[in-house]
Amino acid sequence: MQPKKEQIKVGREKLQRIIETCRSIEERSLDPFLIDINDVVNTIKEYFPQWEIPEDLCLDAETLHRLASVIKLQSEWVKHRSSSLYTDPFLLEEKLTRMEKEEIIESFLMAWHPVVGLEQISLHSLLEALRYWESLLPIKERWKQFLPAEVGTGIATREELVMEKILRDKAFSEELENFWLELKKKTEEKGADGKILYWDFIGAETYEETVQRAFMTSFLITYGYATLEIYPLEEETFVKPLEKPTTKLGKKQLVSIPIAVTANEWKKWKNGVL
Amino acid sequence: MSKRKAVYASKMKRAVHLLFYHRHKKPGVKGWELRKALGSDYPKVLKILDDYLKTLDLQVKTVFEQEKNIEKPSLEELDRARFYVALRGELTPKEEKMIGWRIDDLAGLAITIAYIISKKGKAQRKEVEELLKDKLPGWKVGLNIDRYIRYGYLAQDENEQLFLDWRTRAEVDQKALIEAILSK
Image 1 (cartoon, rainbow over the protein chains, first blue to last red):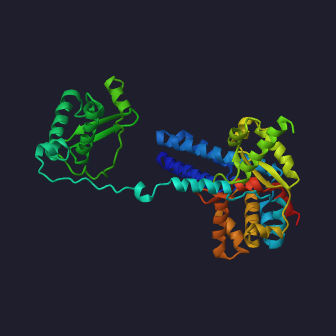
Image 2: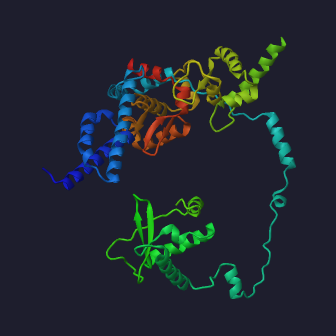
Image 3: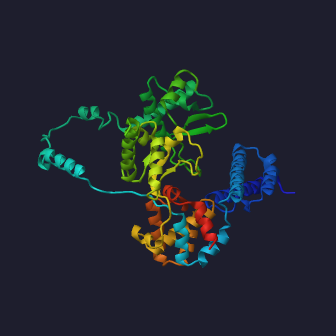
């Protein structure tokens, strides 16, 4: 008897293989009867009791979905075979390779009724075109040259550059450090176990401010000032400030996690739904 | 000529202009375009025109959105269908040269269409290429398939599968083609 872990691994591999076979049948128009449906159903049944985590249940559902598509193809295949248009492809291929070009043409001409179409210029359309030409302005007049307005140079003050948002009033690193301190403070006040709910930290009075805070939080995480804890089943995301900034979190590989900060989500948070 | 007859004669002329002359990239006219130009009785106008064209060995052909023909189409189905004028009878092998096709290219098209029909309406491009390479030079096979696609006889999807496109549905009597090939 295999240990449970081993059985789950084998089961996953088998389901993956079934999905791949079904996919190739669908995409490459292979014979849908290549698959033994009963056998596949038995495999799915056999491993179903082993599935515990959502990923495995999704794999099971995906296998069933793919299998259903193959069964649909089988039904179409049977319908086609029973229709008057059905011809054994091998027989036809054999016939086509043996036939002379002339014979093929003769057969095709018996079934081909080409579409009739005309392309002809008329006196009316010529006169219309001439009238249009007469009323058309010369290209020089239509495409007048637009000279770019002359712009004088001058000196901009630091305040003006900040107003134009070319410079920030604080250095970015300084701003990030302040934001980190704010995260620590808020976590102490509103958080628990040294972490705070993501939305409780980034949420602000206005949506624009919320987006700005989410943007800054992403830098806190990327630069190792904080980390994210995600609980998919509870659908909860926490931000956890770190005591000291670290560039790499142990030997774990860093991954990107997209978090949607939409206006709707913000409204939900404001109304206390999120 | 009665007033009613005169109205239909005028509508028939308008229908001829719409059907014969290319207005778009694809030949033919959509049902809703005909309704706009001829009025809601355009199916009747087309019927009269079809009877008239019989004597000239031409026909008004209807190609519905779905692949299959519809026995009694609704007005909505007709509006979405495309109408063409096509040859009613058959061309003779001599005449086929007049419409600008080389015998090799036409034979390639015939083989491709027949093969796709036998494969339930879709086939891998590679399989078709292998079949054509038996009698056509390799360099020409790919070019020819691209040409059939360009002309609207075939379509190709992202998995390099070939399908029959609008033009085959408009011009080729698929059943007659298979029967003719198998009877040779």
